[in-house]
Length: 315
Image (tube, rainbow, N blue to C red; front, side, top):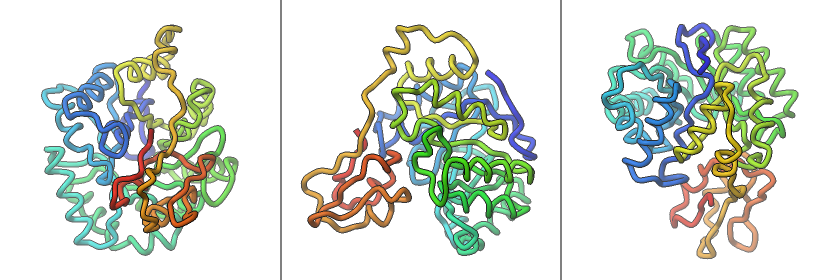
């Protein structure tokens, strides 16, 4: 497995980052022991970098996966806090549930522009204080927006940016794939560490997975790529692929699955909370119920987290 320094943070991360969203209650809903076992398999195969978030509710999986492990594991988490008190609560929750004295990287989740960042600046200032105390090693933002990357690039205090980029441009907001590439280049030139999300377009690019992964890996500014995995076979496939080792046809056929889709149960009450929550503009209200434009959906499952009737699923 290849390891690279993440910008100027001094943190070395594996080329493959374990995206923890998929194992948790928003997607695969794996039992704790099973989900932790998938993460542990990735760590034992050379991965040292895990991406999670408060929203994902996967801290218990990570805590169990790293229990007794001798090597250092880099963990990045994120939250939506916009006040000092909110960020303090979120950071303390992460420390407690992960059973750690510090978090390697902590981020503002889903920032869109300089205006969004200004609205969350009080929370970000608390992160900076935590960094000075050694409770956080690096700070940053995640974003689906070209404007979010450019805004973060211009802010000296931001260390790491986690942008959405893939070969088809699925889910990119505020510009094209080329606009996002230009923004990433600008951010890297400003010294920011960059690790990518949604290389497989939330599952929409699984039919051409190798081409999609090679594309993101070919972007020189990208230090690491977060990939969601929920089975031991997917871990073996990805760790082999990212390490440049041969992937057998049998393993390829084992992990090749039908593309996932967003499923909305017929008991949807049409409250509209999912529409407001969707960062990709994929949801709308039609006939008094939520409806999904599958061509825009990145299958992040975030909409399901706000549904009061549990009628939205990624299947």
